[in-house]
Image (cartoon, rainbow, N blue to C red; front, side, top):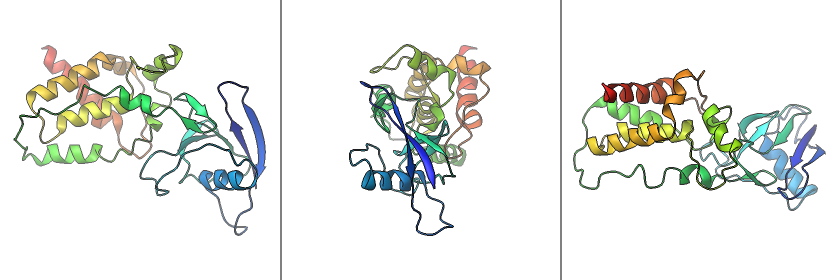
Length: 231
């Protein structure tokens, strides 16, 4: 099977390479990670990429296949597929991107109230919190987000001034946390607002890599809470 991979060095021109993959059997469909592992072993020993659990649980192996974000350890490739780095974050080299930028945006904004000793007994709140906890931080939701694209257009490589679906998910998770106080809820909602939450009113919707309904479980509840706060 033949595939194309793009090697990226920020200091040089990107280069495309056609590579062959030798499956264990004719019926085997390799994952993108299978191909990267074999390419590193047989062609480019210095090929840079990330992977962890190999079970679609850790989210660190996100790459793009034919321009769409995929988990390298999970996505099965077809003949002539094109594998590139995740373009919604700056590429360090080859398939390694600046993942730290996303969580840096959250630091100092979503800490719990340390004086809180009350745990909500509301089953609905617990269910909402657990549902959002399915997020594996693959950051596939950044793809196609008009608000996050402002970060890319501005060339921001340290502090990201604009939000993204992942940041809004973490804000909503802080709000529905069974241990959340009124103070921590207000802080999380204010954080989401400052990141540009109102931009999401006219958005067509964001997509989650693991199936969380981001509009129903994150964006709309945040917008509703903001609207209620302003009344």
